[in-house]
Figure (tube, rainbow, N blue to C red):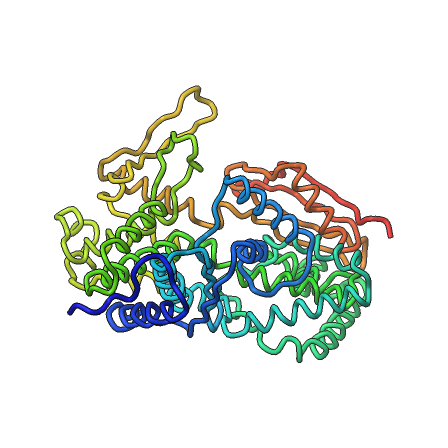
Length: 508
């Protein structure tokens, strides 16, 4: 059925945006079956887009010098033409907020509405990692509380004192999240109302902990060190959580500031784990929606050519030897290609696809298969489950064995059956956060003795921390703990100690 054009030319107004949004919504919800949070769309200037970059895409945040530094870096790169600004930024919140650049053309505005307000929005709402770890309905209220609380702390205790705590907490934020699946989902609602009651409870708990630590009340018939670690809940992977609850020197307001940094870091924790899928989903959705708008006569050929041109730029994959290559796969390119490949396998599979994907090959339900994948996988498992030999050949993937004892590199996985499986496993492993995040845990502290905080980094394949960065981060840990800190780097397989780093708290 041919419908009337939504717009002509590049110019747009808010009436145009409304018509485009309603047409896109009909396709997204009625034809594609997407489920989304209510949308809030804001049109902003390039300067405001730089502000959004600065705050990691959040509309509200507390003040910190690192945000100003990031703003200047982005602004300098933009003014020199080194980098361009995104056409949009979308926030995982309820309502879902999408920022559109006012400089965009009418076609670009329609495309980014499809991409962000429906593609990303559906992924935020449906993917299990976001459902497990985030509370989209509470994040905006919590950010408002965080900004207000830290501003109040600056008025009462001074900007320098608050900045010192924020600096240390930011330095540890990568190790300030819970990673285990069994952790109860965060609930950010009502923190402002509950803050006083929670602080009083934490103080009572803290005082009771000190009253019952080993040494002040001996444990009969049990190993004192083991009992001490048991009462403290050690080992503990979330350093900020442990410091917030147990640090002997922190004041109540400092614990709350650490908690704010920790909860915001936890909120962002799922996003790097689904970057490939999230961008692939949004790109596939916007391309499908804009194609349907063209097929039904709601955008003309000129507009559709603009869509094809813009999407082609986004999904370009540079060769490994290209001077501007980042050395990895463009998440838009690989993610979009995998979504399209799943659609092909479901509707027009080759014999090879039937061997590799018997559960979905030829099932005739590409939309249902894609929605199932978007809901139940993260990048690592998605690649391991759905990367096909056809796509491996298309992207010309191979695997290198880098043996430091040899003068040359060895290509040890090529385009045969065993090679496809080896390449798929290796690529999936590169998206595993356990491979990139340092496994640093609190393993012991004698609160009744020297109070030295003992940390352990369990290394993989002998990959140690960079000495200067480790010691700088350790100094922030000591500043929050208030006593000496010791970090041992231990080979995970053998238990051998590879290196020891220490830090002392700054002088009062």
